[in-house]
Amino acid sequence: MSLPTPSKDLTLIPPHPITETESTPLLAHPPLTKPQNTYYNPKHKPLIVVSICVLCVLVLEIGVYLQLTPITRILESIICRNYYLAHPETGLVSPIPEAECKIAAVQSELTMLRGWAMLFDCLPSRWFVKSGGLADEGIGVCLTVPYGFVADKYGRKPVLMLSLLGLFASMVWIFVVCSFPDVFPIKCTWFSSLFLIIGGGGGVAQSSIFTFIADVVDETHRTPIFFGAYALILITQMVSIPLGSVLMEKDLWLPMYLSLGLLGLSVLVIIPMPETLNRDVESTESSSLTNHDEEESSKPGNVFTQILETSRDTLYGFKSLFTSTMITVLVFTFLVNGLTTSSANLYLQYASRRYHWTIAEAGFLLPLRSGVQLAMLLLILPYISHLLVKYGHFSINKKDLYIARVSVVSLMLGCIGIGLSPTPVVMAFFLVIYSLGFGFPVAVRSLATSLVEPHHIARLYAAIATLDNIGGMISGPMLSMLYSRGLSLDGAWVGLPFLASGVAYALVGVPLWVTRLRSHRCP
Image (cartoon, rainbow, N blue to C red; front, top):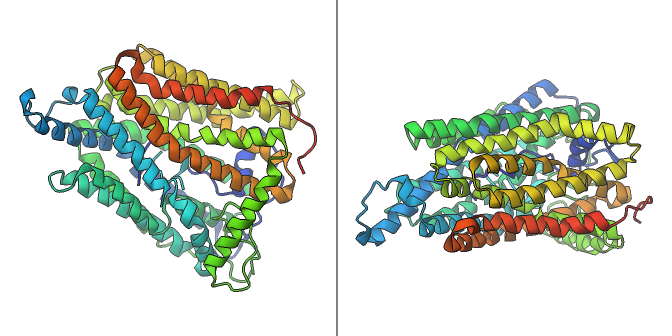
């Protein structure tokens, strides 16, 4: 399990095709299809199920973000201690002052530790996806499909509890490794990803939670609930991160104990949850935990055969998506989507190193990003969408394309500005600019959805998820290596990973700006 990070991957986004329903109102785009892989079950009281789901998300989010800042400092202190033990000529002995840990050797090892952790998580779905926390990028790639079949056959509740147990066990392992640095090498934290095999990690957990909601809430009321949960998560981030910074000033391990307790509590919260699987309905489609629709095998127990058939049909169906230049451009923009998570990993280290802050002080910058995203979600994007459609006479597709274009420019300028910022005030300004690009993936997904036929939406989402995961896999180690290189060059080059991210956004932004939007759907 990679270390918690404030990224696009730490906010709960509904599973596809529910994502389409949840994200569409943000851009004032009516849903093209209703969710086909969830079945409204009126036998259970929606208030009870939704309340438990929201409580679970709230407890889990607080637990994740509370330890975001202290775990960074703990890892830094262990690496720093090991470095000075190996270099006794410096004359420094434990405890090492934090200011002495900002040297290039220590910071380089820290960023590489975190960058490769992201890749290892990808090898065995992104927790809360999109913005960082327990970012389990690739566990979902291998296990979301089989756990989806299990959820449809045996119920949502056992799968969700297993996922939460896996997340808890993963965090316990990191806690143990950091508690006994004389026993475990710090790189043993990478083995935390293995625990995510239990339940499939955060990707399965997030899908299970939204499937619970979709099972008991009719389509009319789903969108407001998803919006409310999303807003609540952003508010939680704004509160939990600075709270963790305050608590670590009193005792570095205090927020860690609280975080671990909350992650364990999230498992207990699910116990009173009623099972919402409607066993009276014979589904001919795959679970909502998958990113694409698939007919069930004639042998329900043959999970591996169904997975192979799903993969084969998905790869075969990708070819039809890329007959359109616009669809190709839109889908491939998701290769850079992982940069949001990976660059967010570096905020604390970068600000602490560049401006000579403690990590606790740097932690107070992060809620600024969540605050801007909250404003974008509730006010700015809906208002801009309204103005463009009503007064600008934009079509729905043209409006989504315009928002995507402006958003990618914000991401590009924000990254470059952060990388070159000489002072904290300037960095905060460009962090706001960067956060204004919050609507980019939502606008791109909404536009791409409207350009394909309804029966191709599933394969579109599968293509997007594939490229998103590939981008997430390579961006972590890549930005870590760039940061290490920047540290060795020193000076303004410390911001090298952010400059590179800005260039990447520019590379996907150019075709997005020059490609014309056609009025017809792609076949």
